[in-house]
Image (cartoon, rainbow, N blue to C red):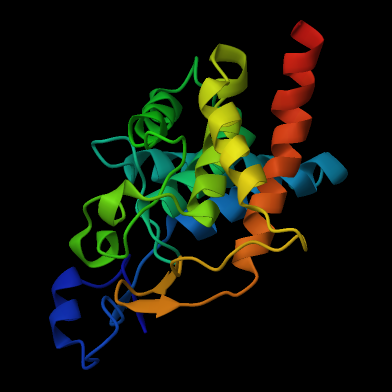
Length: 231
């Protein structure tokens, strides 16, 4: 596979696959970049002084990459999940771990505002697979809520400091997750939220449990406690 840094993008036209898009030239991805930023900074915290300058340079370059990949509406396109909610969740995590905040970063502000703007009336989020090939944010039919995607949006808002400004959107989303849990602790399987190379849906069966429980745990730590203390 060729890399985008050394290869003209028109070679994608030679793609022999009838299913997978953009497989001839490998691209840098928001999700991978965000994860590496977080990993490098976690390593730096555990081992201060070790190759510190190189880590700082790498993180600065990665932050610039994330900022440059932001779409006009404030979202980020994700390749390994559907799609703008997935990419925005990762991008905000990476930027905030690198010291960016709602107050000092236009990219973070735009990302948070994107999430708030597409929250549905009941307080959840749901994005259609159609977003992936079209590269345009498309809600689920009927503006339905998807629990996994609602969880990812909650993370983005929590990373972006929405707790301190107005946690109402997070309270509404958390209520949806709590009420959706079945008596046995499981969550219903809804629309598939994994994807590969724009056109291939991927089913991760445990996403339906992992993401809601993870989001509620983070909500309990970041939002609920602060709300109780302020009363």
